[in-house]
Structures are given as C-alpha cells and as structure tokens.
Image 1 (tube, rainbow, N blue to C red):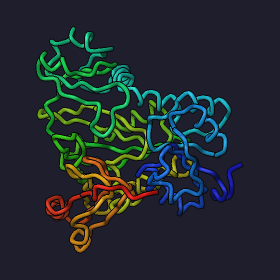
Image 2 (spheres, one colour; image 1 turned 90 degrees about the vertical axis):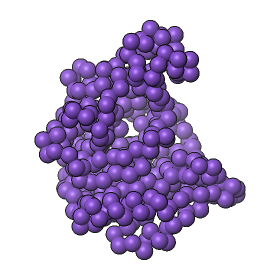
Image 3 (tube, helix red, strand yellow; image 1 turned 135 degrees about the vertical axis):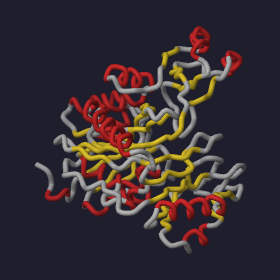
Length: 387
C-alpha cells in the first residue's frame, strides 16, 4: 500500500547532476524522501537530497544495494547499470524507466534499429564495429559518425566529409548516418505514467553551437507549421507508448529543408530541452516526471507564456571556480529567471546553469535572449576551492 500522499516514500535517483538537482526541488512539494546515488562528493544534487550515497551508478553492486533501500527508483542519466535495474525489477521493485527502455536508449545502434522496426522516420544508417569496418562504407559519405555508447552533450559525434576523415574516425562500435540537410532541430518531451496516461509538451526549436554541438538556446513555441508540429507530438507519444516508458521521454527531431521530419535521438528522463517548463508551463517537466513515476495523474503541459531558455556554459579557457559575468544585468531584465547548478569547477563548454526568459511575445523573449548571450560569460578563477 502506498504511503498517504507519499509521506515517507523513498524515491531513489541514479545520478546527482543538475537534472537531479532540479528534480529534487520538485520533490519538495510532494513530501517525498529523496535518495541520490552519485560518485561525485560535490554533485549538484547533494545539498537537496535527504540522503546522499557516494557510489557509481555504473556499478551493478552499488545500484542493487541502493535500489533495495528505496521504494521507487528513477534516474537523471541513462548511463547506468541496466543489469542491476533488471534484477531489481525481477525482485518486484518499482524501477522507472524500465531496464529494457534504458538499454535501448543507451545504445544508439539499438535506438536506430528500434526506429527501423517501428517504421519511424530516421536518417539512413549502417552499424559499424571499428575503423576498418567503417572504411567499407565510404559510399555513405558525407555522413555523421556517432559512438553507440558514451556520447553525451555533443561528445562522441563527428562529421565525416571525405574518405580522408576516416583516418581519425572513432575506432569503436558506432552508427554511421547519412547527413540530413537540417533546417531546424526540435524537441518534444512526452510523459507517460504507469496507468498509461500520456501527455506531451509543445515542441521547442533548438539553436546549436556549431563548434561544440551543444544547445545554445531554445524557444517555445517552435515557429513551424502546425501540421508538422502535430506530427512531431504524435510521433513522440507513439515512441513513448511502444517503448513502455514510465516517466519522461525527450524525442529530438531534425526538420530538413524539404519540410520532412526525422527522429534523431531519445532520452528517457528530464531533458535540457524542457528546462523552460519550470516557469513557462503549467506543469514543469520535473514535476511531470515525478507524477509519472509515482503513479499520479499527469499535470497539464500547456504553455503559459512564450519562453526562451539560454544555456550558461564555460567560456574558452575557463578553469577553476566559476565566475559569472553579467548576471546582475540579466536579473535586472523583466521576465528573466536564473538557475545556477552549483558546480564547483568550470570547464570550457561545461553546462553551469541556464536562464529562462518569459515574455508576452516570443519576439520579445528572443530579443532579450540575444542581448544576454552577448553580455554573459562563465569564466573561472583558475583554482578550485578546497573541499
């Protein structure tokens, strides 16, 4: 029997990064006891957890021990020990998302094969084992090479334009995709609870840093034709249902210059493309994930106001303790909301926080975001504060 409105229920989260930190902030409103497993003693989520356990979420023994002490287990990163998740499920424990879902998403090759089986449009691809195997597919160039495992935040992805590029290509199991002539990259966050109730957030349009391949900013609502956005929403819901996701599923899409929609990648957890929902939507993605994994009715994902989310990342050459230049000017603007992740060390390209700008008009929010992007910098002192 579930505790009365979850008083005393123990929610375990694998991973203590910024996603876990923001999920814990949502948990505070639901009287949920929160446990976090992470190897970093200075993990961003640590100050907000009722109990913090030092250990690797990639270690099956650590995940098993942790999972057996909580009532519901979820995650904020998919690079976890799936064999431990499967064992916990076999023991009758609540694990969301399920081990099979996480296993499919962990491996970009398995993701692509799932899309192929389900008839979901995705870029043409071939699976390769190593650099020698890759050399047999030069007819597919120019293309994009993605490591099947371990790529994250723009890492593990490289362009291959000509056969000469194969000399420095990944020498590991990878996916070689034909390059899509991209006009837009959009994301849809869907939610599904254990009863099968589903909801979907309005699609957002993402603008990427061309060098780091990281999201610079996103805006909602996406400025694309309604039929295409409706197709994206239906596709995200279809994928969530076919995978049997309980929790959130972020689905990233390419829109090509002919107006066709292609699924790029999945993430079965809160996602960078949903951060704006804290201020801009009736229910934030973090509250929605919590509702879903606890078996509660889902909240409304409706957009209250147009919004832009601007990532704050480490500047080139930044090291040591972070220093945020331009924050006071940003907070002086109406409609600007600041989220710093509490990371003690900055590195070039590392996500250190984000700003959400809400405005009655999307043009107004975008104008403020572009001005802030020019002014803001995340620099470093060159030294790290002692523990």
